[in-house]
Length: 188
Image (cartoon, rainbow, N blue to C red; front, side, top):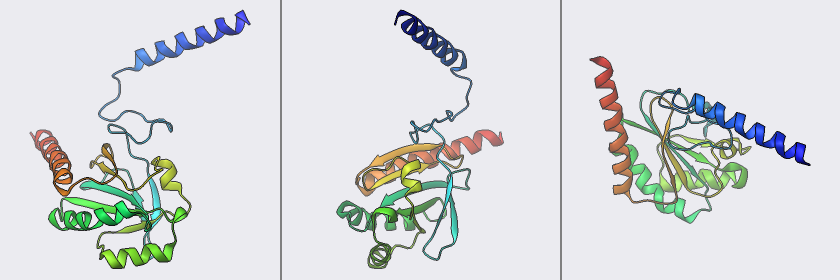
C-alpha cells in the first residue's frame, strides 16, 4: 500500500515537472488533448461532414476568414430563435465571415432538419452530423452551441445558448479586428 502511494507521488511530481518545463513553449494555440476540446485558445478539431447535397466540407484548420460554427437541431426552440440572427450576420459579414451550420442529425430527423433550413431560409452551408462525430469532437451536449474560429484554426469564443445579434457583432468585430491587426503587423 505504501509502495503504491510512493509511486503515485513520484508519477505526479514527474508529470508536474514535465508540465512546468513545457510551459510557454507553444505559440498562440495550445496543444489540445481530447478532454479539453474545444476551448478558446485551442485548435479547433478538424473533420469533414456532408452538406445538404452530400458534398464533403472541411471543418477546422486554416481558412481565409473567421469561421462561425453553429450546432443546432430542428426540435430546438432556442435554435429557431437564433436562426434569423445567424442569417442576418451571414449577410452583414459577407466576405469577412464564414458560417457553417451543423445539424445534430444523429439526434434529429434529417427530413425535419431540411424543412427547418427551408422554413428559416438559411443560405449558409448546412452540414449533417449523421454519426454524431462532430458533436463528440466539439463536446456538444446541448443546443445551440456556437464557436468562433480564427483563420489559423484557433477557437476564439464558445457560446452556449442564444445571444443577441449585438453580442454576436461584438464578438465578430473583436476577432475580425484582431485578425486585421495580425495581418498588418505581419506585413511590416
